[in-house]
Image (tube, rainbow, N blue to C red):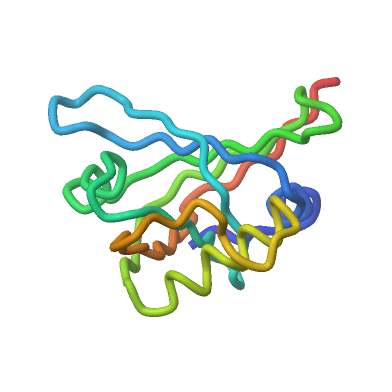
Length: 133
């Protein structure tokens, strides 16, 4: 497992949007914007049952997460890794914590009736920070 340190950790801890790339069943890349936060040396993500990217990572756990600095989009961190945990336990509380980080709201305002949230953990295999500007 690669360590998340220094400026890479700072960018991940700030409310910078993340771009998650997964692999579809046909081998093509599927990319989405997600919220994330760091838990130790892992990255926590959240989604809902029925969406495409959770199905993708359950079949093929390799992912790439790219996070650019909102203040300087030329600075970014890239994390390559794999999903090592997939759980419903604590997923509602997790999306509420992410809503606080990204929206300054105590609860996630877009939860739909009957929606089942999922919390994923990504174990980094490679972490790279770039600041070419």
